[in-house]
Length: 113
Length: 116
Image: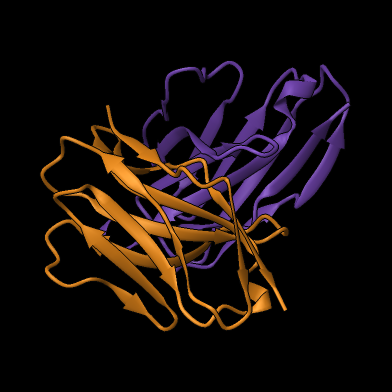
């Protein structure tokens, strides 16, 4: 299984600001995924990020709000832009394993005040 | 549309007892995978067990087993000999294929509390 790290592990941000979350994988992977978990809720897919192409966003998520970069096969960033308290969530990146399984990073716990 | 349903918001079990967490799913994909993840209070997602839609036998991983009933579209997780460390949120998930790739859709989760 892949080892995934995320930075920062947690942050408290003021509304109107932006935060960039980094995801690093210890092996090359084609697809990386970004999920959001709002307090007390399940995980919701934000977007799929393939190296060398634009990220594919799920319904309800837009590039202007959640721009994603995927500069190489081991790294990706997710930016949460112009934050509001509703963006307070855990943000998780994941990579695909065998048979469609996914391995998750430790998550970034974001609080927006 | 694909959907995962977990109808038990919370479950309570005593140490050393077995517990079953329910999961039903809906999909039109002929091939799919079903997963269970554990999320302790730290927030990390821990992969527990996988079942492929064409697998004939139920998956097992140590104290975890997946009771797969394809006709009923259910994929219940059975934890045998519960331990205090099993207290966590448990999510059932299913693969979703589209042009972007194979992602997962998740149920709402079940909170398991194990008491001594």
